[in-house]
Amino acid sequence: MITSLPVTETPADQIPAQDLGFGLHFADRMFTQRYLRTRGWHEATIGPYAPITLDPAAQALHNGQMIFDGTKAYRRPDGDINLFRPERNAQRFNRSAARMGMPEVPEALHVEAIRELVRLEARWVPHAPQTALYIRPVMIATEKALSIRAPAEYLHYIILSPVAPYFAGGFAPIAVHVPHAWVRAVRGGTGEAKTPGNYAGSIVATEEATALGYQQVLWLDALERRYVDEVGAMNIAFVYADQTLRTPELSGAILHGVTRESVLVLARDMGLDVREERIDFFAVCEDIAAGRITEVFGMGTGAVIAPVGRLGYQGRDIVVGDGQPGPVARALHETLTGIQFGLRPDPYGWTQTIRVRS
Ligand code: COI
Image (cartoon, rainbow, N blue to C red; front, top):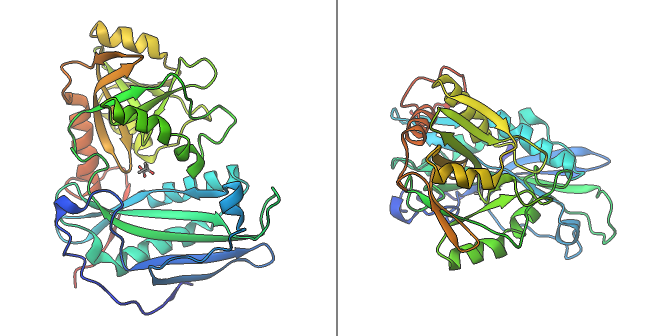
């Protein structure tokens, strides 16, 4: 049972689509619930979006016990709203919680909170093509204690942000830098959890990439610095001229992307030979140079499908194909977004429609 508090509504339609950016504006309401070891989850509430008060000794601030996730709500042509596989995000949220020693949230309540929040904030779901309402669930450890142990108190909250695609250029190809000095995650570490530390550790490498003229970082494995893991904000896939699509296996060091999982299903159904396996970055470079790899693209909730036009490693640039988006990325993007926005049938049962037309 979710309690709803009164909220002052602000006009959502005053943000022009070109000013949305990613995660800059927030809807008027948020969902919160609290956890006490002695009481379990309680006080599920939808109330005003507002700052949260934390004790300066809250364990999240010291031990970094925090997780988040991301999913989106899409405006359909008939005005109603689609959610895309919210239960998969709830499951991934709980997978992250388990890895970080945090309590799981009841999945049905998590999805109900998303549905109810989106229904109440329907006016925040933008109408412009390729824009959406990004849904960001978070959990933080709130108990006041400096010792390193599983806390007894947590806050779970969900906020909403109307967004354009993560990359300002939309479907324009991005340039990706492969750092030599840093690694993101190691098998057995926290790489497959969506926990802020993984992202904090990536910022210096992303800054370096930006200074060198790239938009993202492609991480190699931490042990041999040879095998492809993932890109900063998304998973990655390689398309070969023989119609094979390869993506790194879920090794424990990379994220279980819901977009990744969906794209692999679509790619199989398009007739591609899909393989999830260990991918040698140096073989990738040779395969791109020889024309055996014809396309590289990233896939994630924020980024959707982002073609990679250029990879940079130790001062050398490798252009993928002619540097432009390829037909496979284009077809996957069109099919995936077509399903998400309700522009084409959803034979997979991935979407849930929230009726908001009066
Ligand atoms: C997402 O795609 O949902 C993410 O969490 C990646 C983030 C960098 C926007």
